Image (cartoon, rainbow, N blue to C red; front, side, top):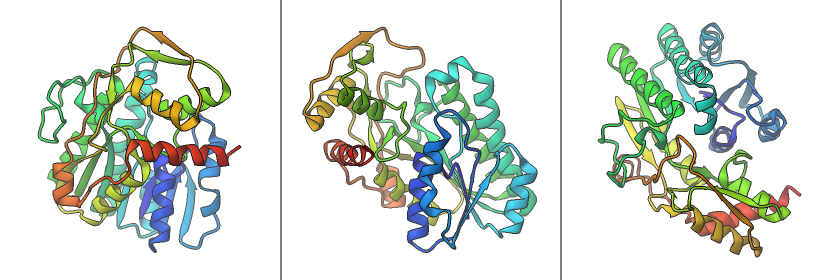
Amino acid sequence: MLLTGVAGFIGSSLCDKLIARGDSVVGLDNFDDFYSPAIKRQNVELLRNHSRFTLIEGDIRDTALLSSLLKNHRIDKIVHLAARAGVRPSIKDPGLYVDVNVRGTLSVLEAMKETDVKNLVFASSSSVYGNSNHVPFSESQIVDFPISPYAATKKAAELLCYNYHHLYGFNINCLRFFTVYGPRQRPEMAIHKFFRQILSGNKIVLYGDGGTSRDYTYIDDIIDGTLAALDRLEGFDLFNLGGSHPHKLIELVRMIENVCDTKATIEFLPQQPGDVEITFADITHAGKKLNYFPKVSLEKGLTFFRAWYGERK
């Protein structure tokens, strides 16, 4: 199979599990500088010499490259994780986000069409729900009101996926991830950043009053859900993959303080454009279709993260 974004946080974690269960993986990544490429290279370092793993450096917007990979490696399934991530950066550079996330996904779909590959798992985001006041968020909700360019690109990519399912009979599962955390989490994401700041004695900046809530999902639960979606590709479907238990931002900080046994210095600043008030996954559909039931509580997951963070020092 082809795994795009293989060197990222979720991609490398998924690749480890795929290789461990016996799959052969062609991993594609362009090692961009959204965060340190050295971190991404370290994520896949242990895989590089594995007989069932092939690493290709390239861009998902290169349809010719994708078509060549699909033909030469006899790819039958694709997990498409590669994307430009982040809500706030997308407001500063919306054109880049549209180019990578929308045109890049179109490039993947076109390469599939050209090579008659029919099976795709696409990584979407809980951000597509915007500031919906209908909680928990269900896949049946209308999601026509994104509040950031990032969210809009993920919604647009979902629509393209459905369109190619309709036109060409592709089997596609779109997965809406809810605030994924755990070992290898990107350094700019809240949990990783808060651990770093608390343990180094630097202040934490919170935007708003700390009352916004997120549905934090541990990486192992996300990987289990993604593997289930990969193994159950039939038609088109949307799935929420979340923890289904939101926590307020200030509550998260207090929990990290407890795990680190260190008190945080907090500075409160105004809420930022594009930030939603709450994310909360209704996972009923994923439970029925994918047998997805998250196992790792936020308390336990933060303990696991602390152990991984300490090992890196």
